[in-house]
Length: 350
Image (cartoon, rainbow, N blue to C red; front, top):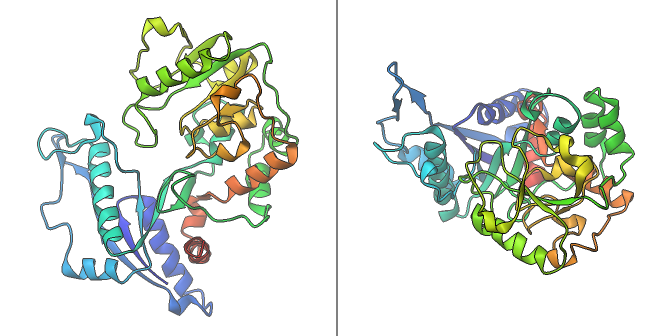
């Protein structure tokens, strides 16, 4: 197995270090693993202006190593069409724009040679911890990162198959010393308010995870839902979103300052595009209608014409889902451990 690490983030460096640790571990397969690193940086000059390396982005040696690798490893998403993420050498040097541009470049290079792409992104199931404690989910320790093959979303990417192995879920649950959280996972039950409201959750305007533009998604959802129910519909936008819906849609606007746990007792269900809010919602016992690339798609609520007939997955199905999701992400310590090459080999064999 050979990897080329596009070192555009600390977690990519962790993967690189894991191979060094693996090769010094004395394991039989260690010498069969090879790794090459391409350093790609983004930094700020003393005056605060963003600079980019003026050197060529790839050498012939870099290109040869990509061509001869089983996969490249890179952090971040790509494909955003929002102007804030369209990089320009003078007009838009924002880090998010640079990241969108550089990731797409390397993904296209790899794919042109039939080389797989291992994508690292922010965590998945770990977000559920935010529903049971104060502060942002990113502040919870240990910090997790998802690891997908060829994409970062559930439908377009592949993730390690749990094969029924639940030790990762047990470790994840037990390391977060919160009894309510542990019960929510281990003793799951649906807790939605049968007389409550439908809440549409939207992402960020510049996030390529979404399948459609936010205004189009909201209008589509409201139009479809209104064909089947006059139940109240509310909108909860991403905390950093600037989206404001048309007043004629008749939506109740939920304050961006409220968390999902703050409003859970008033919710009949949620409606999502590809939002990773699915993890908080399910841990809170709130069913969610999702699009096909959402991590919660297999839980069975995908058709808004059935908004009055929610599918309540059994506890066994939910438990299996939690187990599967626990294999979509890894801690920073795991990413740099000598065990990581074995996990990567398993992912490539999916």
